[in-house]
Image (cartoon, rainbow, N blue to C red; front, top):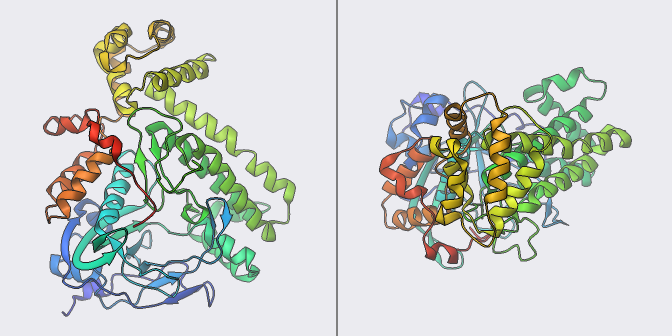
Length: 484
């Protein structure tokens, strides 16, 4: 098929395309045979200047069958706390940047690359749809993330635990550079290329760092800060990534690589989203500490350029207070509190303990609390059957009422602000599973409806109100693993 000049000339090289021989290469995609449309993100396409592209032409390019010669990069990383050596873009092909130079577009599942190791370079429909919906759900929640532009499917068979069908998700980000890129160059002895990489980061993403006495240390400081805020955002909505290996950590503080992720249903701080994580390294309550651990690994890798161990440790030491301050601020907003008071941390801690002991649904509780009537009379919590368990609400409700009374806003204004901080909808695992089952039969209607709802998760969406209910009993048997 011939392509229009519009899309043929659309892509510019990624910012890292020439940073060092041996770390970047160009290779052809293995396009999907007979690609079929799954979902097209028209809102994001418009932002990228792609809204006028004909559907058939888009299907050619985003199924890996276009004329572009994409880029792939090498990286390394620590996986489950152990050094894993060379990894790299095993199934990710970066087509390039949009004309404005602000976003990279990458195909995930377009076949093997020089970094595929023993993999086939493919992605399956199940995981591709989860990544599409997961990234758009996080964007709807206002949490930094990669985005999803398109999902295409094929009848091409792919073998995982069972026989599945192939798919490609076209994902978008300002950059897909990872902690693992730095680790690869540092631990394999390529300081010149590492310096070049940091130079690119400063030019395109951290320009203010150039004006600091130690520019690379300033980049580390910015990454640490963004990571701390990202972890706070995850915790505040009950998001569990599942595989926080350093090669899955973004140098821009984005949520990257949606594998066995999950949103909490019943509040359980020890919840493990990844069936492969048998020791619970990446459990929900471990994520903030893993974020700090990963930043420390990054700092160690950058030490070859910084030459200031005391400065590195000072920067790393800021992670915890930044995370704690950000998390406290987010939970204050969830509870309708604008001005900080000293008793807030203990009230939040006691609330989370109650949610855990009473096995309360995390998202539904905070949305219930954000109702006008409940803010006017918090004692309604004590009568709500789904929040009941072995522990009484009486003491906490009394303390919450007294604390909220010290706010200067009315209950109605407070409730309205809380609804903006507490989504009615999240991408529950069972909803994704239902959408996957339909998509595997060729029906993407539920997936498209989920995308629409999750784009504005704070809104009521009355026609989809069933998706805001507690999950059915069968959902508890669903498990997720790293396999995709």
